[in-house]
Structures are given as C-alpha cells and as structure tokens.
Image 1 (tube, rainbow, N blue to C red):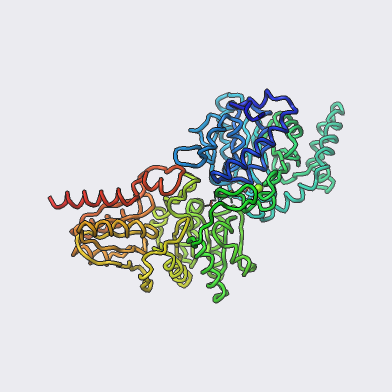
Image 2: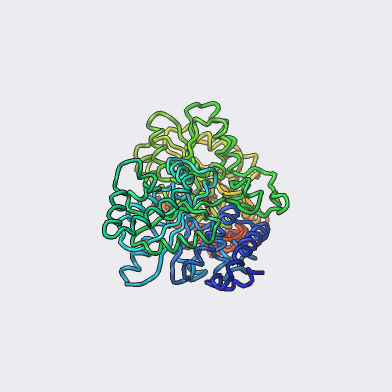
Length: 623
Ligand SMILES: Cc1ncc(C[n+]2csc(CCOP(=O)(O)OP(=O)(O)O)c2C)c(N)n1
Ligand SMILES: CC(=O)[C@@H](O)[C@H](O)COP(=O)(O)O
Ligand SMILES: [Mg+2]
C-alpha cells in the first residue's frame, strides 16, 4: 500500500510520480471505510484529496503554515502528517479531533471550526513572519461556502495591501453544506467556466513580459483598463482589482497542475488567490450524488450509503421544523432565516412550503440578525434559526440591532448545550451567559418535546425579542403530563415538597427528574421546578420556595459563570433569602469532543455525581 509509506509530514515527497494516483485512491478508500465506522465529515474530505496532496508536495511542513477554513476538510492533511492511526478513534473522547488542533500536531498552524476565519488568521501569520524576519510560506485554504462569510471580506480587504507573499486557496466545489448561495457564488460560477482563460492569460502575460522594457508596463496598463477586453486577460477581476492576484481556475483533481500553480503562486510578492475547482463527495457515489447528506454523517453502510442507525424519535430540531411550518401556515407574516444551515436547523421543510418567506443568507450570522431586525422593523415576524455556537458571531447584532430596538425577532438557538463529536468549537455552552446580559431579551428553554412546541408558539406571539434555546438530539418525552400554560416570566413547579428544591433549565429536565427520584427513594423531601424562563428570572417563585426549602439546586448545560444558577444565587443574596444555593453546570473551561453522555460524566452533569453532591451538601448544612 502506498499509504503505508506515509508515516510523517513530507513523506509524500518521496513517492514516485506514478504512485500519486494510487495514493489518492487509497486515501479515499481509507476515508470512506473509517468514516463509515466513526462518522465524520465525509463529502468535503473526499473533494480535497488531490488538492491536499499537491499542497503537501509544494510546501514544507511544519515550516510552512497551512490554515484550513472550518477545518472539517482536514482529514487528508491529518493522514499526510502521520495521524493515520488517529482515525480509529476520530472525534471520540480522548481521540483525534475532527478539526485542526495545534495541540495535536505541529503541522496544524491554527485551530478552526467556525467558518471564514482562515484569511484573517493567515494574514496574521504572514505579518508575524515578516516582522520577525522569518522565511516560510502561509497558505489559507477557504471553501466557496466560507467565502460567503463577512470575515473573509474584511480579511481580503486587509490583505490587499500586503507587500509579501500570502497564498489563499479557494476550494470551490459550488457547495456549502447545501448548494451555495449569493452573488459571490454566482460570480465564481462565471469564473468556473473560464478554464481556457487561465492558459490564455498566462500565455499572453508570458509573451508580453518578454518584450524588453515595455512588457511589464503593458501588462499593468491592461489590468487597469476599464474595457471589457480585460475580462479575457484577467479572470478574477474582483480579486485583481483589489490588488490580489488571481490564478485559476485550476482543476482541483489534477495534482501536477495544482503543483505547478502553487510554484507560480510562491513567487508572487503580495496576496495571491488560487481558484481551485473540486467536486464534493468525489470517489464515493452516494456522497457525490448527495453531498449535503454526506457533509457530516454518522456511521453508515458503505454498500448502500444508508445510516447504520436511525432514531424513531423526533429531535428538538424536528419539532421546531414541524411547528414552524404550522405557524407559518397560519401567520403569513412569519419569515424564516438560516445562515447556511437549512438542513441542520430543520428549516428545509419551511423553505419548501414557503419559498418566498425563507432566506438562506449564507454563512453570515451577523447579517442574519440585522437582516431579521430589518424585517421586523418592516412589520414581519422573523424567526432566525442558528446553532448556539454560531450565534456567538452575532452578539453585537443581537444587542445593537434587535434588542436595543425591542424588535420582535425570534432567535431559535439550536445545538445549545453539549453537542458531542465536533468538540470545543461547536459546544453551545455560552449562550445563556451572553444572552442573559442583554436588556429586553426573553430567554426560554423547553423541558420536553411538547413544551418545545408551546414555547415556539409563545415566542412567535410575543411582542419583543425572544431566544428559544434547545439542544442537539432527541426531544425528551418524559414529564408529559405537565403542560401548564406558559405565562411570561413564570417558572413551572412540577412537584412541590420541602427541604430541597431542584430548579432545572430546559433539557436538564431528564437529569433533574432522575436525581429527584433517586433522592426520594432514600427519603428526601424534594421539589422539582422547571425554570422555563432564564430571563426574566422568576423571583416570585424563588421567594415563595425559600420559605419552605433549605437548599436550592440549579442544573443547566451552560457555563456556570453568568448562567441561570449564578442569577439565582445573586437574587437569593440580594433579597437576603434564607436558603443555600448550589449550582451544577459547565466549569470554566472548554469541553472537548466525545459522546455527549461521556462528556456529561466528565463535567459532573450525571445522575450519580449530582445526587451524591446534593446529599453531601444537605448533610453538611444540617450540622
Ligand atoms: C460561523 C459558522 N457558521 C456555520 C458553520 C457550519 N458549516 C460548517 S461547514 C459549512 C459549509 C462550508 O462550505 P465550504 O466552505 O464551501 O466547504 P465545503 O464543505 O464545501 O468543502 C458550514 C455552513 C460553521 N462552521 N461556522
Ligand atoms: C463543520 C460544521 O460546522 C458542521 O458541519 C457541523 O459539524 C454540523 O453539526 P451537526 O451535525 O450538529 O449539524
Ligand atoms: Mg464548498
């Protein structure tokens, strides 16, 4: 096997040229096999096999620095830098990450996970290199989907003034997770068909450059002209006009051509963009036919491409997806917005039913929130569905554009809490803290699938901004008999006893309920309260229950700092209530990848740990 010859970075350079094609095939076979067992990001990785090989042939690792945008397509890079055995426990707790990690390898120059950061980070590495007088190349590899994100343009704008080499590789497969959207995507479509121009341009430029004295001047003049003829010579004018040399489009599955263009790119003394055309899912027919379905996938059967396990139960996202359609049918003012995550957030169903009221804005969370604010100011009822960790991008817009004007925008905060295999960059562990500080914003979280539906209806009917937070995965079907009407700012007391009161936020219902059952079995008197609203805090409920309880317990899947528990404690102290407070949540650290149940144990959000801690706390209070 040729792949066996790759034990460490740069080993690929020792292969015979005819072995490269075999290597590409073996890598694809390896990726399909491994990801069919562990799950992971398949389609994007299959698309960049040759591109990654060419990069590894043309550059020297770890001396040269590669920054992979999002990083979900870095599997071949991991293979070529000696991490083959890591694929056995890819994305498992303690195992190899699905994203580049500096702590994992010296060949990973920058950690990624969220999109559109690679050009900024790459430019930073370039400037650091130049200031320190070092001599290496910096290459940022960004996808066409990630090029819809605002940060990429801020970085290009900044990079255009550069006077030293910086290589930006645009990996254009004409896909984000779903088909890519927007004007830049259309522009790239135009360039994609201009294959002949590259050779023509190079030929013309080479010939002109040979004219002694005036050749270079003619080329410069030609690039400045406003006439349409420039198109013929200068594809990629958008970039060229900014001062960034455009090379391409190049066939992203032709290692030799790619290698040659990277050698050309190395010689340019400013920022250069190499436009590479690849095919998402290449080499595995089910992924090629359905790249969205094979973007991020669980274990699957290689023969059929079918997932190995399918849940019969609805996820919280499924409930959102169905109920928002029902709401949309009755209320023509309801519009829905996604930032390139229509499948993940469940909005695809809405998009099919109400295409004119659905907006995929690209990977542009900041814009999504301000756009929603504009829609609301214009009299509509926007529902923006985002993952918790991607909402981090749009914090200012949430404050400045939505909440400051008290506009009735619903922010559906999906993937809140631990998400699992994607790890640190994707865990939704901060939203309660950063949203709770925002005036005018109401924050809700459902205890089960029925409350998810009720809360969504409540949020859409409410005249002001609302964040509705719910996790990845199956919607809880317990506590089904509790379905009291949702009253603004009021918690829901499920069981009222004495001594210990357990307050939980959203999907911590399952844990809180099982802890209470455990405590009841050994004779404790214990109330159970569904917070429902994290903001406003139900202070009346706290005051009332403080009269009959000695210990308040809070449970949330959010960092403890700034979370629900801290707000409860702050109020108890401020109002001088005679009750102790103990909070369970995520400690002040990043939580890595792994199975969610395993991670919950690691952070102490499991039944055994919580029960034991409560008993210890309660006994120590009695002394
Ligand atoms: C800020 C942010 N929003 C959303 C995502 C989710 N996401 C991950 S990959 C991806 C599509 C990226 O498309 P592209 O850059 O073209 O890469 P491809 O998968 O096509 O290789 C999206 C939307 C993200 N990682 N970061
Ligand atoms: C890389 C990325 O950001 C997405 O592909 C993400 O992994 C999707 O996560 P879900 O599987 O939770 O939709
Ligand atoms: Mg793409």
